[in-house]
Length: 186
Image (cartoon, rainbow, N blue to C red; front, side, top):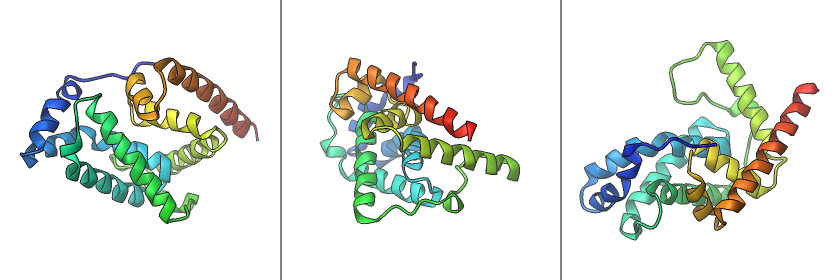
């Protein structure tokens, strides 16, 4: 699996250094990465409003920590590391209250009510299937598929080799497919 990279992503490190003194540069980083951070957080928490709040908290923490950013790896990886910590802090402070009724719409054009229900059911089905994976397998799926990090960025963030991440993702996707097939057959 390859995750597309853009020229904008390659320009993040210099922009992040500029953002340490110019807030408008941080605004550009926010625009570039808000969707991927939101997707990652949303798949973790399952609630649109909570994902919005935690995404905002992630960017606030990133803004406050810009002086600590060093060009060791991609800015997106650094940012997703902050998002992981924000979500972990949230779950430590609150017991998750996940229900299908609490799921909100993802920020995009308004789907029809039928599409919205279908999307909610698919997301809930995927979230249930992710719970059957090991913590590491679920995290590698979230980082690679939803946060769209590269293999090397995911490896750096999880403290593993790229080969280990590839194998972990391969096994996770295999197990995820099995769980989704089982759920469909019920």
